[in-house]
Image (tube, rainbow, N blue to C red; front, side, top):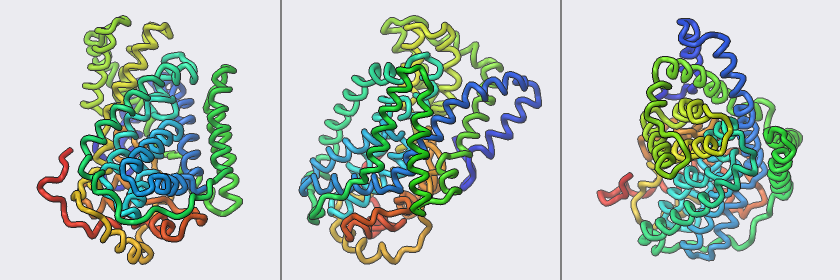
Length: 450
């Protein structure tokens, strides 16, 4: 997908939905029915986005970054393991968007502060925003769509996907240890923070209660989105009382334009399906629950996601995969579609310019960070503009082609945790914290290729 610089996806999707309804490709009744079907999913998505942003304003991500740095004790292999653990947890619980928009800048600043090569750790965020989004429905918009279509509960979804989630992350960690062996062997040139960070207890408590609410509402047959909204609103009220956020910022954190884009895209996909795509997919999509059939479904889903992107692909495939109702065979097909599609994203390009830094020590850059970060006056990311579902996300998405542009917008949000070590606060508090790395030379010919 390509969108004009600086414009939200809804600018294209909403007029397109209006056109397909106006020309009769989709009836108004069918368009309204599609929007109503997607509304619970979109509401859940908005609640999780708001929850993640409020956790960020509480200082949860900075505290996690400092804790990982403190625990690694100067060992980059431990640092990579800590990044994997934190990124996997954030992706699973607060969605892949939180990992891309909120956690990645913190990981970058952490590596710079320690004088470690940033490539393994930043690239880990890019990969885990994909692979670690298997576990829970809230981890990924495609998971939410599959949950709605498959008729499985929140807890059942997690139980089914849990083993695959663990195996995928484990394999990826081993691959990273080998692929980035030289970067990891370089070690660190700066000492870790002397003290453990102060844990934002309130935010952690609300987050744990929200997770318990997901399980409780699922067992009670209620929509888990109410648990997400409860947790998000509790943290939002607290942020408003402490003046860490405004009402406008809170509304923006829900990604209203992206939610509108999802609703409009659903209408557009219905027109495409009615135009012949549904019949074509029905002929090539295998049926049944045998291993060859499931592998065939995964292959079709992956190819379609590469051709038209993951969100349109899941909207196109789920009506076909769920045609038989919520039977065990149908549930297998739906979840496999969601798995294959969710593994096919363009998120790596979001961080790629930063990852392509040359494999040199960053100790000189750390010194530059300390001196120059506080002088930066560039725009800070006030809120994520919407999910990174197969697209570049938020302010970070607007400049992925040039390193000098990509480093700046991939920045921490406003609302720095003032309990952090002052040296770490300087790196975390500026929107140019990633400019620590700008003193590095341009990527060498031996730089890692995508």
